[in-house]
Image 1: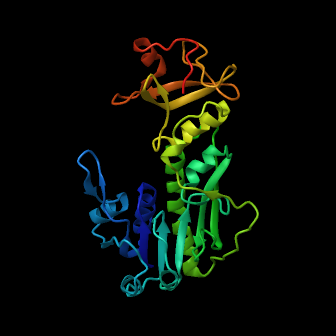
Image 2 (image 1 turned 30 degrees about the vertical axis):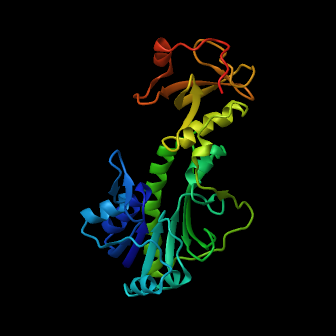
Image 3 (image 1 turned 60 degrees about the horizontal axis):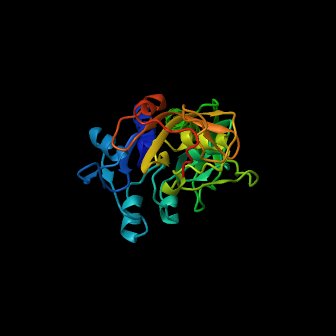
Length: 304
């Protein structure tokens, strides 16, 4: 098919690659504009933009699609469909209506659960036992369109955001190709999303990164698995922001935030948490026991 692709982060790169491998014609790629990044704060293209450039694809990076000029330029592409994966801009109705088969979204959750910006992390934070990918026919509402295809993925108890991100990107890459095959032969059918079970996956913020020791240890451990690498989970120790990269839940009670043993077992609202892998400011990640050799923490210390 003659397609427009619209995506920005790494998650979308695998999906664009699969469309090219399947032989579809990508007439244009839309992505977020380059942003300052790195130590020098130089403008860097998005992962999708960079990948598309290596494949010789035309890339467009408008700040908005609301102007009549941008909408006319989009319509002039005469695409059979637009494939959208974590693009980051709202698509006006004129854009949704322009391709012959409309706009198909690759969404990293089992809709209607986890509509919105951060479905991967929210699923882990909630302790979900399964996730998956939905191919959805887009409409004006936020992830409210009819479901075209859906594929589930069981989640291991130690699932992390990077692991789930990669599995769902791979799953979505295959599922969108299947959806287009069915669209081409007329066997792709849509069904409305059920209203029951709708949950919104709010965008992640830095405010969620600091550990609140009054929460149950199980919830904090899920926070560690869900919020690394960004925004990262941390606690304050002697004025240093210590990132927690891996942790385990253990028994033991005390005032929340109290260090219970010389191995950095910390009391929480329920049970206790033992950081296993940590990172001090400006340092490489290390095992917590390695940090304690050089910077022992006294039993009874109460962390902020």
